[in-house]
Length: 395
Image (cartoon, rainbow, N blue to C red; front, side, top):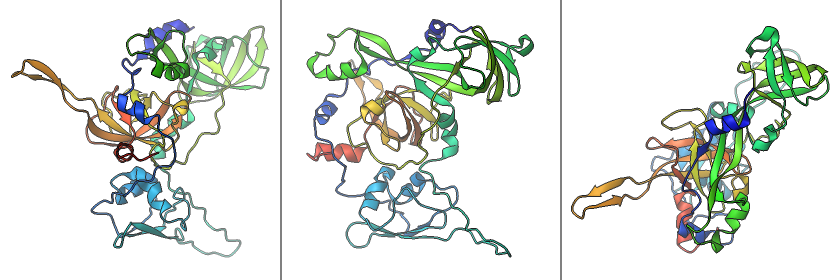
């Protein structure tokens, strides 16, 4: 049996210094929000005059062939209102770029897909899947098997206490036993294992929303902070079906399992639907400053196509498809002449795209990285959007 307090203590990851926002962006936050319209689009010097969409392409990859900033893809398409949605590109489609006179424009020639061999009988038109916004194979497990929930959901959840013939591990087809308040026979439950309990420094006794609203009235350094959980990561290991209940002990059968189920795993009925699988690269329409909290895959050095967890979510205005730039914190170096330590400026190190959003946290995929990224790196709105604000423009 796993103790909630035990695994929280072992797995808690704190991120210090995230309470205070950059002063300049605090001013930006007061600006009214509206859609971003950049004055100019930055085309790649080697942008092709035309490109034929292929199997395996992603929307980000196609955008990166034409633009220095792939998150401007939607803006480029908005200059061509007669074209269909940029979310729907299919293998065989041909994109033409016209950049000779004035602003760049696109035109689209719909392809017919792969040749079809004709034979007697009923003929069916082949179906075509639109190219995804990012490589779905890299994020599939995080769309299917991961959840971030309030830690309180585990307080009264049933737990696995024994496997068939007292085995410690169970797999598909095995029977197991659970203790707790189980639903009636025939019900299906997910089997979950707790992961990271994400905690952030918040003023004592305040929720994150209340704390953010009070920021303007609080002098930095005067508030009392405590590490407060903003979400618990759960990984779904499989599904079980309740066979029978005897008091508060239930006998269950494992329907499927991607990992072996152990004693202490939790049984929950969580919503597993309604997850976005179409992603349109674009910049956030409101100012966002976030931090890389962790790498669920457990890798040490973060690079392209790695998944990261970040400390901003739905409550902060993030949506699937939003792109944020990664800023590596400047190193501290010694000035021997003046006998002082100097902090170098932050540098742009890559970009991430948000693909799954929870209330206060999100998962994002690293789309580009000019150097190894790290937990604690700062994420901001892309540079072209910051420059729009700095020049007096509005979101």
